[in-house]
Structure formats: C-alpha cells, structure tokens
Length: 442
Image (cartoon, rainbow, N blue to C red; front, side, top):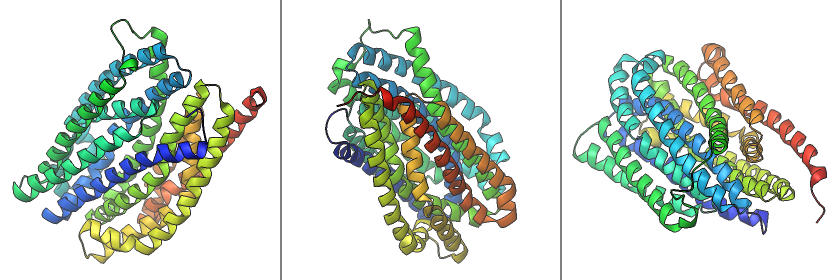
C-alpha cells in the first residue's frame, strides 16, 4: 500500500472485500428468504428484529479486531516484524477476553433487552430461541474477524473472501436442510449459522497461521504493557464507535416494533436490500483503514491525501449509480425478499430503501473520512461522530417515529449521515493543515 498507484491499490484491495460483503448480504437475504418461505412472516420478523442485537455484538468484536489491525498495519508499513508479532499476540489475548465478557453479558440480559424493545408476545419465544443459538457462535465470529482483519492489515484481502464464500454456501445449504427437510424451524436457521461460522473461522485462522509464519508470535514475542494499552485503546475506540451506532439502531428498532409486525417485516425486507447496497460503499472504509495505517507507518502522508481524494470520488460515482438502481428495482426486490404480496409491507419497504439511498452521496465520504482519521491515530472525532448518530436515532425513536410514523425511521440515519460527514470533514481538514508542512518535497 506504500508504493504504486493509489487508485489501482484501492480498487484491487477493495474488490475482494466488496465481494465478501455482497456474499454476506446475499446470505442474509437468502437466510431470510428460506425462513419466510418455509415458515411464516412472524418467523421472518423475529429473525430481522434480533439481528440488530446480534449485529451489535458482532460489530463490537469486529471493531475491536479492526482496531488491532490498524496497529498491525502501521507496524507492517514500518517493516517492523518484531512489533507485528507482539501486536498479534496481544490482539489474540484481548479478543478472547472480550468474547468471554460479551457472551456472558448477552446471555444474562437478552430477555430483558427484548422486552425493553417492546417485542410482540407472538414473537418473543421464536426470537429468544433464535438469538440464543446465534450468541453461542460469538467465539467463532471473533475467530474469523480477528483472522480476517489481521490478514487485511498484512495486505491479503482475498483469503477472507474465499473463506466467507465457502461459509455462506454451507450456511444456505444447511438452512434448507435443517428447515425444509428436518423441519427444525427457526432454530434450524440459527444452528446452520453457528456451524458455518465455526468452519469459516477455523479455516481463516489456519490459513493465516501457515502462510504468514514469519509474523506469527513465538514464546519469546511477548507483548509489553504499552503494546496492550495501545491495542486496547485503539480496539475500544473502533469497537465503541460501532457499538454506539448499533445501540441507536436497537433503540430505533424498539420504536419500529411498536408499529406492528407488518411494519417489522417491511423494515426487515428493506433493511436487507439497503445492507447489500451499503456494503458497496462502506467497504472502501475498510480499505482506507489499511491503506492509511500502512502509509502512516511508512511516513507517506502525501499518499494518504491522494488516496482520500480518489476514494471519495469512487464512492460518489457508485452512489449515483446505486440511486438509479434502487428507484428502478427496490419494489420488486423487497417483495421477493419478504415472500409476500402484502402491499403495505412492500410499499413501506420500498419507501425505506428510496429515502435511504438518496443520502448515499453523504454516506460514502463518511466512511472514508472516519476510517482515515482512525488510521492516522485520531480517535476522538470519529467517536464523537458516532455519538451524534446515536443521538439522532434516539430523537427519531422518541419524536420522529411517533410523529410521522415509519417515514421517521427512514429519515433517522440519513440525517445523522449528513451531520457526521460535516464533523469528520472538519476534523480531516484540521489534521491535514497540521501535517502538510512537515511533508518533505518529492
């Protein structure tokens, strides 16, 4: 990432991550499709509403491991092999501790959280059955995310893709087997996910350990106190950033649940489509984390600014294409996802997608700037922007949704995107003005 054309590097590094995210979102759609086809709309809604909880925990773990990856990428850019080994050892130990704490807390509080979200009585049993099995898979999810983020920090974005594709295919086949053939119901979908996550995590870990042995820590490569401090602070910053955003999503989900099961089904269908479209945008943020961290480690800040400009241009063009796509096909796709002819569900899902997609030109720069600032060691401004998003979602849950209904749900995130991008832009400009005079002429 420190040599060669930034445009080519960003594109070639991002494509495998984009494909991985597309496959992941296609799996989410396929999983929901299997549930809605073989079971019923209540099961479909139960899977959709519990996803905000499981996603919050998975994103928190992913955020931690992304933060670890930032320091590994920085050391990789500086060609400091010993520091890489210490960081990887520390990252593994911290990941285990984080997973133990999160899994324990999740099992203790999952029922109260679902009750707090005003989960309808007819969905509570199915939601609990599904999400408890998913929570058992958190260690496997952590193993994959840690392995994948460390591989990306070392410049390998393809192997995590191959592992993920294999896992997704396995998951869908097991979904059909457990639900359609064995008739295990909603629990079958959760068990399929659990098995697939486990296989994916172990394969990704084994590949990384065998193909990057020079960076794997030995018994003597013990992380120092300052290594753990740096890893924990960076990981916590990234993890909290995602967690804060997801807390807002959970609060907003509580407001959606009050609107009834049909609205919940509509939101699940619309969100499935938006998630796959968003993955084409936010993936560039993952790339910029590695790109910026490596160039910061190598002292190539001139390339950082170049990369930011190129990445913003790419996501802006993509956003305009996606807007046209969504307005043409959102109605048909959401109807297919929900396996329904209910016009209310289809219309509300389409409304959600079309409102959200119009603000994608603000969303792209948001991810680019947030990950860039994280990559250069600026943790506060990205965290502040996430707190702002939480605040907007809380306001929407208590005021917008009761006032204007489901349209308030559709407007909540776009409003926060505009505000967050404004704050991050100011932070990026201040950082650049501070460092530009120190860049040596080439």
